[in-house]
Image (cartoon, rainbow, N blue to C red; front, side, top):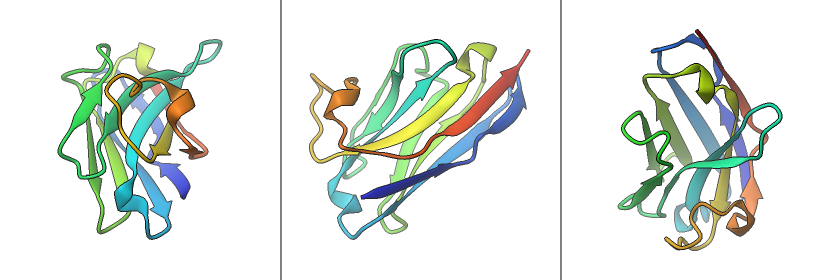
Length: 125
């Protein structure tokens, strides 16, 4: 699976963005998908994940109620809607894929097999 993230940009605090991650390969619908982010000088951190069917989703506490993950298997695309953005949301956002979802390891980047190249989100105050 090859992943291509897009949709990042510069936005003011309180604004919104929608990130997209387009996947190649016919098996996209069998993969659970996640979004991670990495701010300058910080470790990569989990943001959100969604099951292969889209029926289950998971969020980091820091983004709950502000971000929404969704997917369209017909378009081989997963989305991350970012609302009420804060300066601390500034980071490079990465999409990732894993063959099976586990609630125990959903936030662990080591369990994701495929990664996109990242898209930069900058939130100004």
